[in-house]
Image 1: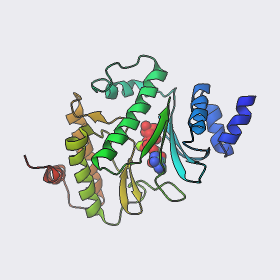
Image 2: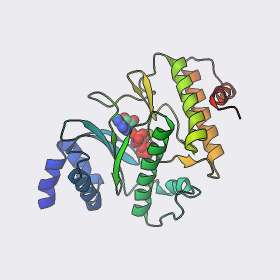
Image 3: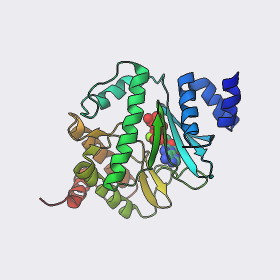
Image 4: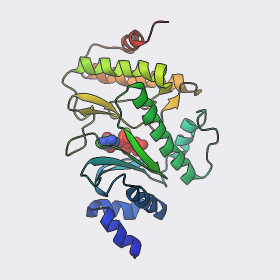
Length: 248
Ligand SMILES: Nc1ncnc2c1ncn2[C@@H]1O[C@H](COP(=O)(O)OP(=O)(O)OP(=O)(O)O)[C@@H](O)[C@H]1O
Ligand SMILES: [Mg+2]
């Protein structure tokens, strides 16, 4: 009973509250309280996205700044697939057996990946905190979340393509990471500037499948830009990426 009263203070919108009641367990709700107690946000406002593995909400801190709160579902059906992106990543020597722990590990991995990408100079949401299966980060958008490249192709496609090519060179060279789910669905168009999101699956370049993932990322992006009318091929895009790499 007390929990419920609390939740309605923490989650303002009824629709969002319904999601919490249906999708998230007590541990998730407790973690949400913990993050709010630490001041990472004051309350959750509304749901931005309901994905297969995670839901993303807009939240507000006590000064009225917006935050994005990504909460991984603990009963996701896809968790077997998650394993293969943690196994082989040297930062995570022990892959958790327990599903819930595995998802917590995944959340921590997304936090770290965002840190690494940001440090390397790739535009990603600034990660602020994580607890259990909840990640708090910078909110990308104005009132609403910025649309994806899929929903709102950038006006200057050529420039966006060059930025993405540079990201891909930087990722490998500086961050030593491969995004591993790069596509027009995981890049936001924030006032014309691309912002990379959804970094939970990103792996170290030493991961046994890193090359395969990198090639898939190249293919997805080359396909997107050519679909949008730019003359481009995988080979050409790869050349552009190489052009951004430092010469030895
Ligand atoms: N930092 C952010 N600021 C604003 N909106 C965000 C942010 N992060 C995510 N979003 C919104 O939530 C959507 C989904 O986010 P994301 O791609 O990270 O998760 P997902 O694809 O649902 O994850 P999964 O596929 O693992 O379930 C994005 O398309 C965007 O609309
Ligand atoms: Mg996504």
